[in-house]
Length: 251
Image (cartoon, rainbow, N blue to C red; front, top):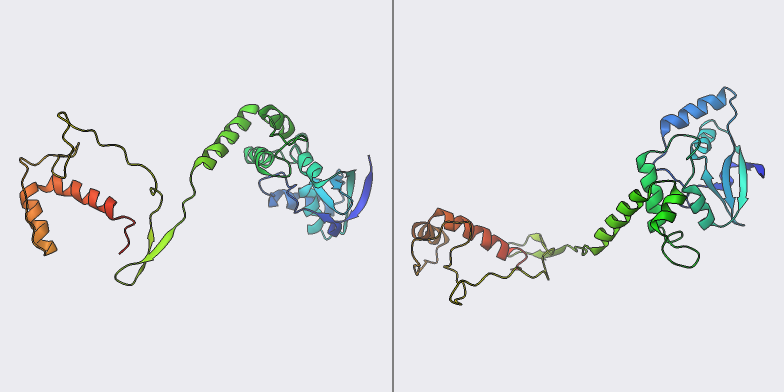
């Protein structure tokens, strides 16, 4: 094992090798206090890729040394690439240090599934669930659930908000989620007659008879005429349908 005293400023921590969901400040403070009292900690682990030193294990110890004002830290140095560093970090802290949380385990799995640097094996093929589980030291069922959730998210179309100017001069956002989606077919009644605007809506009370209505141009009197002729239940259903038809319609 090659252990060296490395300057903290020479160690990089921004390469995606931080295996935890978050650094625990309480643990950093506890380690820093122990260092001030003379405690000795195990060496951290770094991967040297020829140009950079990537920290892969010992982030709480690293931050504790910085908090104490230390300039150097003992580190086990391994030669490799940034890819090797990320893969090594996925199983860090399994047997030592602050115990991993469920969030830490999920982050390790998601890193291996989504980080382009490590998402495939040496042949360029996606890792199997079993291999991801082995490298991240988790159960294969967790890997399966997370992979499935990623597939579901990928299948959802992206929703791009669109804005437009109304006739009143204000800016509004058009709802685009349902654009391009086919509406469910309306079942044709027996006899082959297509439904019309006067066909009763399922789940709502139907008008007593089909009445042709000549509505005035004044919206208030038109509303009163509809209420009188069609009934409150029908008008409520009509409002819902009209609202849906008007959504996204530009002036």
